[in-house]
Length: 281
Length: 104
Image (tube, rainbow over the protein chains, first blue to last red):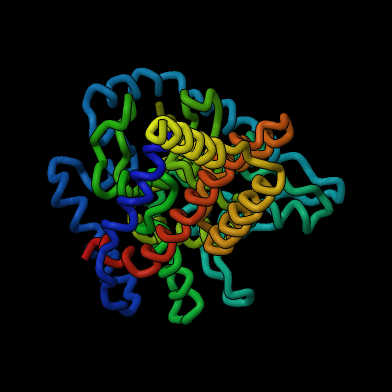
């Protein structure tokens, strides 16, 4: 039966191939407006800033459960641990804060950013590991608890601050934005899903027991405690898991394309408040 | 008598044909199928669009071959090749088709 399904899916991919659309020039401002309009018109009863609460903005019953859980937030331990890590010097006596503007406090809303020296997108997770390496420490796994604790603490110090992602007038920045946009809308995996299949076409709908989150504001609550994971998860972990769930081989965490899609999604959320760390079913 | 001979000869030919068609796969058959599957999977990798199920089929093919079950090994390797080619077709089609999904 799985083999029959595989062949059927392959056949569908070939048959349903759509005609090639004309390549459009990249225009982040126009894409931002269209993206915002799409979600606000589709969900007119959801206050704009509430989109950052993901599935809870879509489902009243789920929201009640979340509010009950949030009396004793399951991510609190990660904030505490991250704060402690920030206060603990590296072997050379320096701190995480020394690598960041404002000692790393209240800056999460500015990530990811385009680095005009290297021409690449720098995410908060990447910046944290580069900070470690610059100070003689081994990098952390991008998908495990240490990284989630650091980003949880940094997100907590930025709560309520609006996303402020810049796309400078630099062809490399525009190319990164477009690559991220392409990745977001590209179908992949044997199940032939794109990120947009779930988070643009189907927010508020169920896949099994899960309520799908809208793409607007989807990274604002990262990192998250997920009951499904029984622990914290970073943005890297979320991307890797999404790819696996559609039966696609994930890219290495912090692959250029993952950073580009984070850039694209964060820009689309400009103006929405940081709400991390968050909790999800 | 002549009719009986004809039936016997026809029957023997049919048996021979069936035997030939269902001949057990060899290690060489498996290696050929595996090479084709791995080449397709490598091409899917350059497009950053491998499927998890392709890897699973490749692993099943190698496991069957290690156990000397070359019929299963060849079938799994051919399955892996089909999956890898489908993932390449998907990536090629999506190279431009993604634009039609963008919110405008």
